[in-house]
Image 1: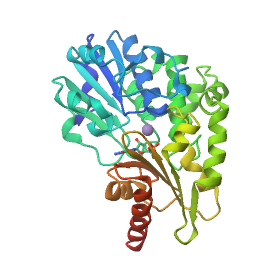
Image 2 (image 1 turned 180 degrees about the horizontal axis):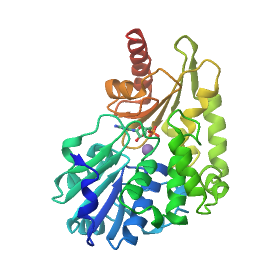
Image 3 (image 1 turned 90 degrees about the vertical axis):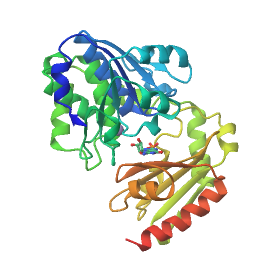
Image 4 (image 1 turned 90 degrees about the horizontal axis):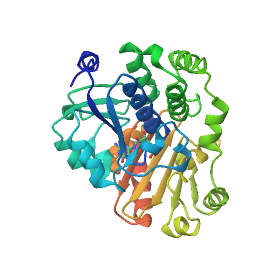
Length: 334
Ligand code: 5GP
Ligand code: MN
């Protein structure tokens, strides 16, 4: 993988570009993709954002979101576009397996591929150019750097700034996590100077659910959470019946994994959800528990040191048992 700066001169004439991100994009994935799209369009390129799957309603306010193509819903249109692109920008993931049903087509695309990401253990051989930096708070921060380093600082407008702000806000836990460096705050100062409406962005993302989602959270915290004080860990396991009863939509479980971390002494939280095709894990920790290694070792996943995800095709009950024995083994090796 060549350095990202090499891309700048290659983009001096109009190019045909697709941008993609991980499945079920979160605010960082969607915000980064849209900010880069808006910027590259301003530079005269033909740009399309293609998401591997659908996305939560709380991302629909983002400028340009209504033009994003959902690969699962519009497969042939997406494939027609992909077949004609010169460049593929891959944001907020580092392994094509994170793009679900797009994995094969993206792997085989003959175009130039660019990685911009902050997760651990990138599959660098899959990309021609890129930057992978686990010290970065968010992919949004890296897109900001990309724009500035490619000479586009003055082209950042309110729409681009709003997308970038949403991404960095979400990935830093509203500027709380240790990844929130002084550079993050300096970037946010610049974004704020472009007149972004930051209270509106917070509300659009965090105060935009239906009543059923709050009732669902009340139910799972009362009935589906187990606190393992001896391991400073809590686990929430959600069976299919809850997903159906509360009519959960994409995005409704976002952030739920963080709730148990507010219990005094709890250092690690795990959330398991029974999705149709798989059992999906989320892991979060406060300090010294390595969620990335844990997810990679036991649940076919990965991510960051303090936030990761994984999956399994076994039942919820079997997953909970596997989790408990994995946790015991993992902690005994620390
Ligand atoms: P979440 O729990 O919000 O789905 O994911 C937490 C973090 O781990 C995100 O940065 C996400 O990109 C990453 N992640 C989630 N699931 C997986 C997975 O199955 N594999 C890998 N490699 N990363 C994941
Ligand atoms: Mn991210």
